[in-house]
Length: 466
Ligand SMILES: [Zn+2]
Ligand SMILES: [Zn+2]
Image (tube, rainbow, N blue to C red; front, side):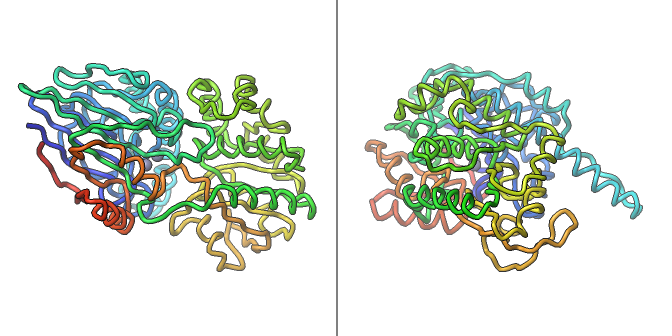
């Protein structure tokens, strides 16, 4: 008998973490950060409900922080086992966690200055770079589609999830005295329309299935509409002489954008001569993507031919802006450029400087390419209700045109989730909907019920036996 406890990304999208206890082993599936509002993020400070030293291993679905971002805390508090992931997750994990440690330290220092002045006790960061280094030394990579024994009674295999580079559907085979039980954890499932990565692998057998439900209540816009709008935006910006500013997530979205821009450039639809990637994190991630070009989709022969020569060969005019001086030089460009920078929801990073320098210009275009959470500057821009916005201490008039592109999601939508799950053979696995807000999970549950499949929505802290 084994037991599974739902600890995070349960009834919400972030904080992915599940504890599996078999007769011989205790393992965690993911150990991610809670992200979003202040009250959500406070959950990161709460002690684990288990003793980290008692965990034998972690199996990690992918390198997004909401799946891996609490791993250094786990190590800081006594975990000494190994962390298994796919090969491409291995380098991305380093990039993501080192950046996270820097930001945690910076935010803590900032908060402590305030506290010092107010005579309040000082805070410690959630973890430090040393904790990240300790965690990274525990990494073990397993190639896609190879089964490995990771503990005495558990074999693990990783299968393409098509969400970001290295993202995996995790399959665990649990050896019991008289039988083998299979648990499949979807991780974050990709959007089959995404250009670079292969589609999520089809799995047909499981006893237990944990399925993400981020977009369980809706389907994405058709891709053609989105590309048409991008084409028109680039054309209009060139006509009016302004810049095109694109806030983008460093891992995945940025690389997809560079792909589409290269594609449009081949059609003659990118009049801009200068395209800046103004984000050290996105430059690092793009390099890791390029190093793993063998994992790319092979649908596009032209891209397959050019990709080994790097992104700048694929998208001519692409320039990497690494240093703060490089970035400030880009700030001074008043028109004719495409500028891609982070953070994806405009909550920090260099994009805020570009918005400060461009948002008030009538001829500038801001292109929003991803989900914008409530309370973020990106969401304020999308909602379009404010005539002026405060950025970096300045009052800035919103005169630029704001575009929202709906089809570039890195997640499967409702129809795609149902289609993927539809490949499981009878008897259908016991199904648990995770990694989704309440309405998304409920809506997906209704769809499964209609097709005669009972879908459960666990609550945080619930345990199941199997
Ligand atoms: Zn993800
Ligand atoms: Zn996620």
